[in-house]
Image 1 (tube, rainbow, N blue to C red):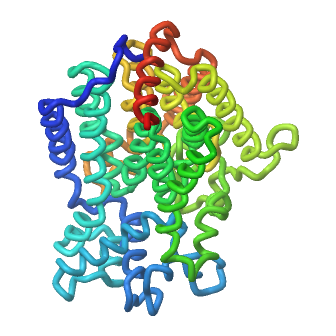
Image 2: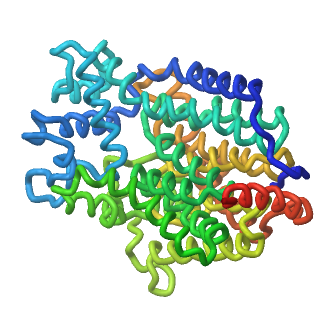
Image 3: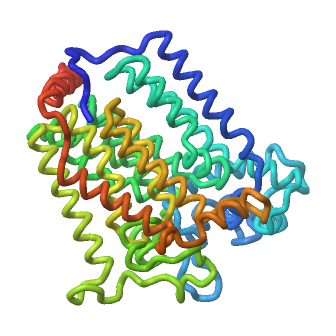
Length: 477
């Protein structure tokens, strides 16, 4: 994956901005048929419940208020109402205000509305809630499609830029995750992409700000930590004052987002430090390498304790899957770090790192949900290169992520669409579960990319000159 021989990055023209706006509209239009649907009812009911708790006068966790989302549940379980990082809980607090300002008084956030969502009801109150609570991810999708088009247009030609924006706008796993399922990966992918783009231009203070914001929305943003640290090192070097600015840029959004929750700091701490103990299994239906060691034909979310292998049990040489997975992930980070340092974080090696880090995280770590491969779609499109290797790798990621999401949740009810996907995906393919084939493909891709590394070093060096030009502009007095 390389950049063409250019001496300066392009500046997006009025035409490119119009095309970017068109990509955003296309993304919204592609999601409209799904937004009002019930979605994955358990997840959406949880989001609505957390939003209800976050406002004053909550009936679930009186007296309510944003910090109460991290309060312990009754019964002495030691678990908070929410295990999500605080960034998205603040979004939910805003959605609670929007919802109750629009909905008639009998349809405002309530235990009854949550029960109706959980049961898959299809009435005006549920549809209104779906439009509002799926909204942030859907809007983020539209913004990402536009930004990807603009960013790629700076490095490549117009056709490549349009392909990137359109592919993201219409990518099935992205549409299914945000508009149909109702999940929120896109809400943290947006600031994470902003961090990567700013870092690639040498604007490491802006990179730190957006990377910190992404981490406060979803802890999975940490998968790009090696890239952020080495970009900061590349452009800040031994400049202590610039490192101080980078640190301050990271601390400010983290502190601002965490501040409302300080009265429930124990719950805030558990959202991060206790995450590994929340679902201590080798996989959470994600087609990672660990799916190969404990395959199942269909998701067993109701019987997780008896159906899923724990990642804390001795596996090889007395080491647990969690330890082995952590070692593999750290090994991949070391490989990426060494190559970034050798390439001075420029051009082809930067694109390669952006592409390989999310799939290494997904393939090697334990406790992978099916949704944790979704960010790889966006990262690969940021690293777009119109060559065969890129398209083959992207095709694998797009196919695996689509099948993984549909394998877990093909939709609500028992209609023809749902019945078709269950009949196709919840059975063996040539004596192996579909997840085993997909896990093999994604794991092989991760290993192959780590072993081979960035391609076409000569063109990568030319691209490095472009990146240095941007860096010099960024740091010029």
